[in-house]
Length: 592
Image (cartoon, rainbow, N blue to C red; front, side, top):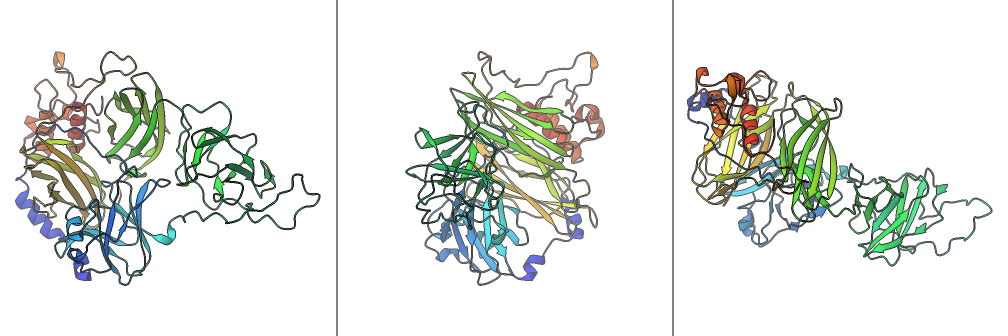
């Protein structure tokens, strides 16, 4: 990509002219959408890599992919390492299609950028092909990875990525003394570590197992590498203090390929081995009740609860700015229907916010209002009364003075939309505190076939309207640009359907899963102000959210809106956040 392409930006003056012309074109249209924010990748899918070391790609000449993304369960992402750069420019496509490059590039699986570090990474159209463009002037080896297709793609210097655990030595000491030696050894055994581990576990969960195998201090190994025997060697410090001489203690097989060992001392480091050559690298013991997989080299909670948690994630990584919409997602399997509850707890004040009470919905949206460190609590309950809990730590910072722009949310939130019914999206963003302090917005809407159905351009207009005419997923890529041309981009998916499915709620009968009201109170008695009733009709409906959106777009005068009722979040001003909170209330995503 030449420098003129990279530096070409719409100027502030041109954006102001365009926004003046178009400021009255868009109006808000009410759409009751179910929040179907996507879950984190699990490693079950296959993603192919189509790459060309050029800025002038010709994917049409490719007969197949140049590689396949690898799923790293220890890091929770798919990755592909691009090596041997011949030029600074590189164009590639991430696709679920295995075939000719021309077909793969029409519907790329990942089409947004989450973070590119020191590299220039962007999504664009080159020679008629949808692809990602990577500018790498220093010709470094680069790892590109993604945690979910919606969260976007990351590009990092491969030399900064934690190295893959080295292979086990081909041989082990043939004989170890059965009694302690009478004199200290002059050299340390070649397979016994003499220093702290070089690679710590990267994905040990933040919570202890809900139902450990016993009250004893246990460590487990999942022998997916099919070793004949499994030993555990533990030590602290320089190795003088250890649980046993090498190769350690033999673990006990408890079921299938799962082995356990009761920890009787206090140890920092651990090595699993087969007693005769195969072994892990130096590991850090993350705590009691964890299991290590000797095949994929990952730690996780060893949970014996009948209600098994398979995932608990957020769609964006910590930290984030206050006011940013963060989607919590979870998945679990139990006895019968599984119900989910999501709570955000401020660690400093111990105050908690219930994001969604027990329902069958496995996602919830959190919009933190204050900076701080939070515990995101995922509670699980099944029809038989079994429970489980997971917790994530999440940091929120104050972005009020951020030079870089950042996207807060869109309204309505991603979910189902009705085919042939117009949808108006309203965006909220922050930052951009530099130069003119102005923010510019661009919406790119693609239909299920990957065709762009609108005319994307930057303007001061925070809204976009389109009508889904086909069934399937419509993607909306929102890009926010500051006056210094810095940008933030996020992609949102909306499913076009013939009839919108209302969110399901737990039945009344099971006492273990309380029901959640699906509608707000219908009136306010005695003239008392009613929270959210912006149109003053005495009830809370989607029209109240639309009223706020129209007022923000200067399509309504102030006498047509009750500002006190419209100020849902209590911050003494009416913003798009208030409209979003009304929609989430009606969709049973939040309560107030």
